[in-house]
Image (cartoon, rainbow, N blue to C red):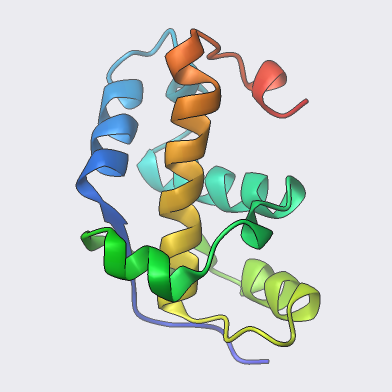
Length: 127
């Protein structure tokens, strides 16, 4: 399986969530090296919590205006996430649109389920 290349896009709302959290070092993103680290965390979180089963990436993307945020290699430099998702979902085309939608969906999910409730500790989020 070849590695994906190209751009990862997320919504303006997700970008704002990441920026807000990264500017507050006492909160969640203080644990991450940079914003793309949070993108990788969101992707791993989605896979571990099976959030990838909750949405149709094509419908999701068409309903959410996504803008380029990262190059794919900054999120999945060795293709591990791509390989995992293709093995979990051989019936789904795992492409940049799918990965972008999953990351965007997960950032909003983390914001709604944790940040908006005042939960910022990573240990609480990953339970």
